[in-house]
Amino acid sequence: MTSIRIRPVTAEEFAPYGELLEPRAQATKMINAGRCERHHALATVERGGGEAIISIFRSEPVSLPYQCALLERHPLGSQAFVPLGPDPWLSIVAPDEGGRPGAPVAFLVPSGVGVNLRAGVWHGVLTPLDRAADFVVVDREGDGVNLEEVDIAPVTVEA
Amino acid sequence: MTSIRIRPVTAEEFAPYGELLEPRAQATKMINAGRCERHHALATVERGGGEAIISIFRSEPVSLPYQCALLERHPLGSQAFVPLGPDPWLSIVAPDEGGRPGAPVAFLVPSGVGVNLRAGVWHGVLTPLDRAADFVVVDREGDGVNLEEVDIAPVTVEA
Image (tube, each protein chain N blue to C red):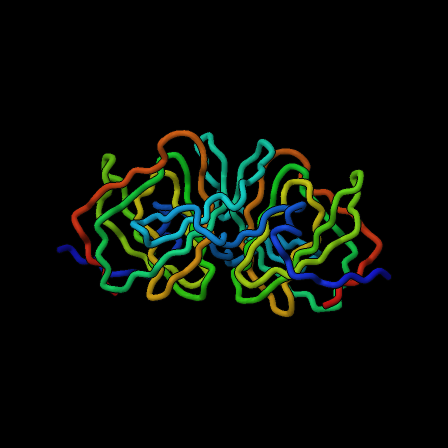
């Protein structure tokens, strides 16, 4: 079975899949009489003719090594996940290769940092590590089929 | 000077202003083979012909008693705030009375709970308590004037 190692996420390496949701090195602007940094429009919701909605996902954790055997994508809309708990978490994504997912990549995302997956980006299911966690999710609601799931040859994700 | 006391937020009392962003008593549905609760569409982004964007606000805290002398509203879009830190925070809102804010109400929002302010709802600036805090903000970007600010007779917000 193929094994992959988790790598620390960086904005550059994540760029083919989407954006990191974290403060930039410099605030876009100061608001509220200088009391608040606005890090503006870290991501724009892709809503494919539908609407943007805000949900909460409460997920059981996974432990390492973790076997990933299924990837999914949402062709009509982006999907953002921001963890509400104190723990780092795992984001598994994959490039598209002619309508099928290519080799998965596993990123360790720090505590307090979210990701926005652009429309059509292959990804694993939500995988907090070791402890259950709540995530704010911003994605798309509307007509049309917005979920594709694909079984893949299982990949073992290792620390 | 008028004083108001902070009250613990409830979904019912907050309903005239917007939605609380927290898990419901029952998940909307289970996803990911039963491993994840989806609390679906706690709020829908009002975007008034624009787009929904995701930002982060990093705000200095306020201390109590806090003097509130300015309210604002966004007539074209909703604005959601979800705290990323471990602390409760303060949400100050006010009903609309003929285009001007009525008497402010100060809600204590628990740790991990966000609020979605509907388009046109009068509110104070972001007010974490005692410690600086980051918030995920989901609001609207697009053409048109989406900010009204009004000076009010100062109100003292007390614990």
